[in-house]
Amino acid sequence: MRKTHRAFAGAFWLGSTLALDGLALKSGHDVPVSPVVVAAGVFVAPLFSSGIMSPDMDHQWAPGPPRNHYDWRFHRGFTHRVWFATVLTMVCGLIPFMGLLHAGLSASVGTLAFAPVNGWWSHLFGDMIFGRIKFGVWSFRLGRFWHWNVGLGWTTNGLAEKGGALWRDPAAKVSVAASGVLVAGHLALLVSAYS
Image (cartoon, rainbow, N blue to C red; front, side, top):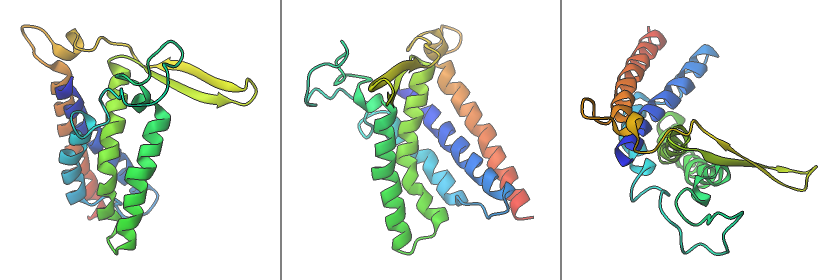
């Protein structure tokens, strides 16, 4: 559901940037993601996790017949593959980031270029919680792709996501609560970095 994806995207961005900043500090470097970028990414990543600005749609225009008895052009089709998200990260994340660096922007601010693709990765991880994502690698030994489904397989729009009469949208609310904890983690990290 869109509400769950967007709430999870904020938490995913905060968790990703907190991990990056924490690893950098632990290895003796400065915080690589500016606090302003962390805050801005909380608003940018959800826009690309679900809805009109995300690749989460049917792609009936895509060429070719159905693959392996599954019409890969429909929902959770090719846009929900790890290879697609990786290409998207390179084209829509890394290239703009390098362009911003080349234009003279600092790396700690340029990191915001990764917020849209971080939103899409959060969508994929969310789909692995509520459902499964097909993951595949090329096997040179077998001469073909080796596929398997990854994820918890919880029911989309089921009790864990939609809730019941007593508690509506528990997955979104848990994501918002986790975001609060992650913001506190960022603040603690900044205090330790600059004290």
